[in-house]
Image 1 (cartoon, rainbow, N blue to C red):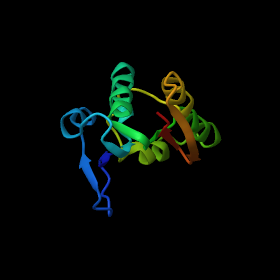
Image 2 (tube, rainbow, N blue to C red):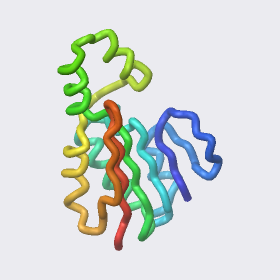
Image 3 (tube, rainbow, N blue to C red):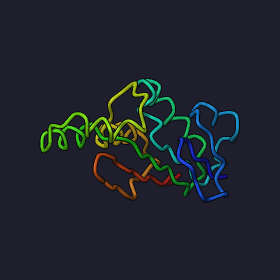
Image 4 (cartoon, rainbow, N blue to C red):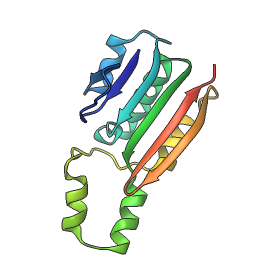
Length: 139
């Protein structure tokens, strides 16, 4: 099972799409998912809840399953602002995502996942103001 958690429109029908990250506990058994994508979902949660959702997603992944986390990187946003301190432009960039309860960075999320010995970072992309981390479950 492939699960997408976010609000973007997907053209890939192979994903089961949900908006609320907590719903994954009801739609997938432990070790059932081949791919879980958290797309701009964690920043809409508190940090404590983000850690719980990451833990839940890791439990739902099969061995060799992929966890993809895409979100706004506060460090990158600060960098953009330092280069061009136009708050109207920055608000326009993040307006579509909205609903922030926490500020994240790719380093913070990596720190949360580093405690899991069975998760290996397989890819990282920093693009404009967003990060994308890809992890695979080893065991």
